[in-house]
Image (cartoon, rainbow, N blue to C red; front, side):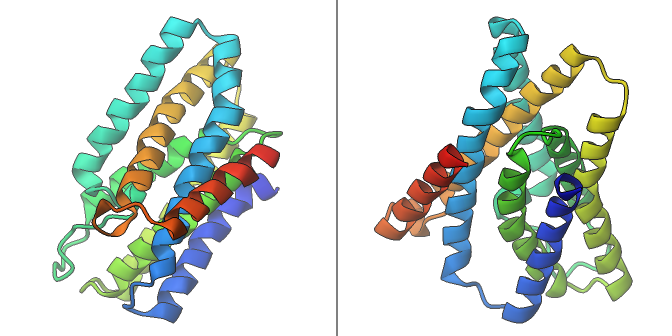
Length: 224
């Protein structure tokens, strides 16, 4: 049951953090982003990548991974990088941010497919979603959208990853097709995690705190 609920809990926790901190941007949010990026990248390498290469042709697998990277780049044309902690939409706008909403939902739905019954990717998604949900919630709370619009946005966003996992684990999808989706998701995770690692420092500078956060993320993922 936790594989379905953990991503939902992550969004709830992100909303609570945004509520508590109000409009303040805390330094530890950037450190959590660094940790989550390293943790997600490491789990992808340790868990998903070997499994996919074991079941699919290596050259074709590389093609699907590249498709995932390109798909995430396309999604970010609409979300403006919200998946890795950047929200550049107009806070003073009153119309519902449909492009941001749809692109985030597609991303969340697909990442749910990577969470299978007996793997640890759920923890990677959990750690990844907490800072992202916090930043998105901060943006929404500072916007001119009404409470119902914000509530609908966050509830559907929170449900999309569990929905992807439910469909992946409980429908008659052939083995190869499951691995193809996993390869696409690997590309998505590669793009997001590496972008986080390169962008989460002030002025793109690499500092000791960020290095420790990255090292912890990799180490915990390895021994998980």
